[in-house]
Length: 203
Image (cartoon, rainbow, N blue to C red; front, side, top):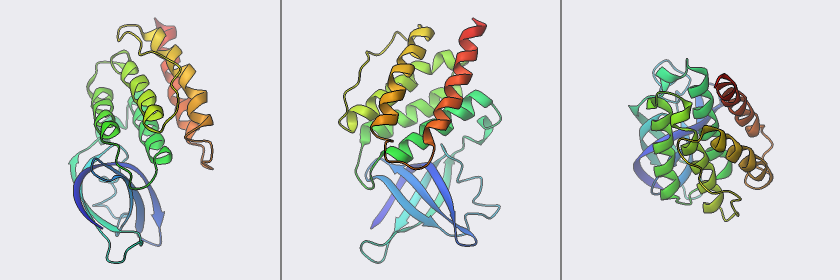
């Protein structure tokens, strides 16, 4: 495998003493797991933040083996990690993408939608500006994986309707694309939904 492409960092897991296995969402090849050497060093740790957009040089010398990757930062989500709501949204979107998608199957519409969602989370004045984008992303992911979606896209200005749509989508996501995942990915969604609910209570 040889691929050089922009990619979103969706997950990383420490491997051996200094490396990490990183799951990268690319437009051409979909989700790709790759080994990044030196990932726990000062230089690479800020690059491997979920949600970051990187230029990934992915290569494998042996067919079927996990490729290695070299990453260059294109856009950082680091400045938003200190904002609890934005951080929770970025964490959930990336965790869902990493856990639900099969390896090396392209989903260009999901790649584009993930980028648009992350941009909205980071640049909208408040969650009211991106809640419907989150609904749209979850619904698109279900459709792309072949599952029925039980909702219509709510009005962008109707925040309560967006939360109601999220509540309808949650059980379907847990039951279908995440049904066989051992990790508690849905825990990240629960944190996000709780924080969104507090905004609704504030009026």
